[in-house]
Length: 360
Ligand code: PMP
Image (cartoon, rainbow, N blue to C red; front, side, top):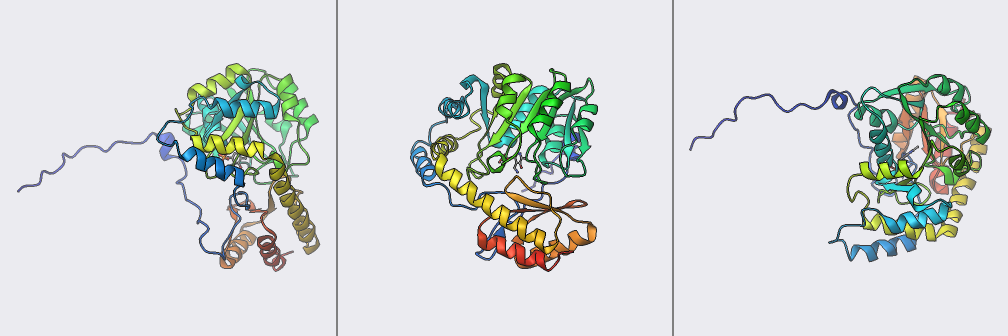
């Protein structure tokens, strides 16, 4: 038997926008009881019982496709937010919705302005769409420099991404400053307010009020953080009906499973339980912030479920070694600093003990 050699041909090639992207390095998964998973700003609480029950119930129908238009979830969200159902679009995580936003609005060469450092997915999604990321450095207080962002807008700008409270620094944008910014931005530019951590914030904009007055505002939220459904992948946008409808058109068909849709509805119905969990995290955040300040750390007050510290190259390397050695998974940003999720008191105490040894 003679094996046929494959004909020598050129291999299929990826687009340069794809080969130029950083390779995806998955985080180490939390294996073992001694590992503290503080790298992804997840909820450390067990899933809400009502969400687990809703998933089990929906699983009995998993031979069927989910509702592609997610009508029941969108109606429940509309009621929760005080908007209309045609102003809501859902997707596979808010990162999925954000991809729909960028591919729905940007042609090749269009520009997307965002603060840096902010959520790592922003430049990746922009480049993947063939658009151009425009990074505007954060201000000295680790917040958005809205004047510089307004100055970065050109006639190629299609989208501005604002993250409040900002991941990874935890700093919110104030309502008044955001409104002043919206006054200067052309109404043809979509201003996305990414509020992945809004449930944890005591300060920040009233984004729904701004949405009602500025039709170019789009609010982006998720069930992955405070609602504790990171593994199910469901997020949503609030936008004027024409934009929301456009987002639904760019969506991957059936991208949000029936399990995710039902769990999200059950989570919205369990609002008080969710709020109790959020206040538990906020108390821990305050306790850690106070203790770290007493240790000599100079941190900006965080409005998210995470803490952030700047660290030069040497300190970062020291901290990464120490956290790895202690079995605590945190997120290190080369050249910038470290972000640590606020979780259960025992994990938080491990973080406090470790940082005490490295305080200035
Ligand atoms: N926006 C921000 C600011 C985030 O930090 C994250 C998750 N890290 C997301 C969006 C995406 O979350 P998801 O896709 O799970 O909704």
